Length: 429
Image (cartoon, rainbow, N blue to C red; front, top):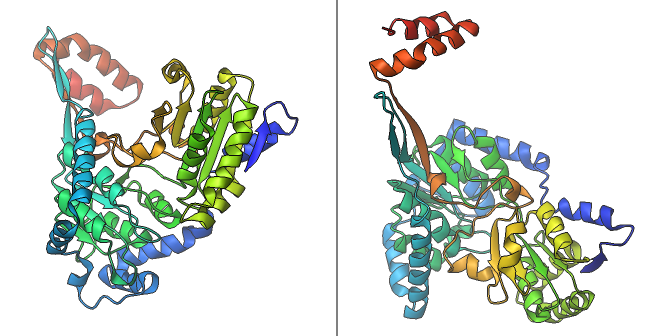
């Protein structure tokens, strides 16, 4: 893990490299992903069976084998110990409570001349959730994707998850039962995205696809966007930390590693006003690395994509961090709420020494499906509105159209659209 000083002559070049940390070379996989999706469109279930045999190493004999049995979900839920069950319920309740506050409202505005303008908010009919299940299974991702869909009022929530060698994580099954999932499939990767986007003999097409995944999943989501809506194009996980001299290097180190253990491509970047904190944090990182189960993954991530930047003051720190626009941002400073107004771009912001990033991954309540690779500059976290859409409402009275119709007809005439003009003028007076 390198320490960089913003005063060094090479800083601009090194910082530019950090800004590229989320770039995914989709061109390298787009041909493979395109073939997978086209085969799904053409051969449907047959293509799914081929892909499962090729990638997940098990054979689908009957179409019904693709589906996850709801009785297996209940059995898994019943079999987990009470302490874990309580933890799942606590997470569920907190996530649901937070997302209920996000619900947008329909509204009508009655003008004095009898016109009515407004907005109607509706849930999509059918949502597809992609939940990773390759290197690890993530029940927390199921909660974070399913609960906002449920709160939005989506009637049909569909889950796809890979099942290497036909096996599925029991805790993921238990989470499905807790969320009331009635339709789930043993399908992963680009195949799952294609199946949900275009439909097969077994899987009905969805309206929106959400959820994280590897570069093949991200590329597939990008390719099907327009056929369905998607939440975002998410890349490797990342954390940014702004710290001052008051921060505890042990806290900082383990928080940086909380993302590094996800993936060799994960990024962990700290910006600090203290050279002493920088060095002590680096030392603590390498101490803590030895204690991790995923030491090889975390070490590669920290060595290749980790950095500590030493700056003059917190103003410089926030300016640089806004350029990075991290997925997760911890403000490990004396007065984090004083710094908050200066933060423009981050997926989720964690305030103060007792708010580590993992508390947001599991149980705080806000969604952990977040924009990565700098896309927090224009994307928001997954939320209830990802599963909803808005319709405009327009109602003109006779008096109302006479007040504004002449101007409307003139604009239509200017654009050379004669039927548009006549459609309005025939109603005037």
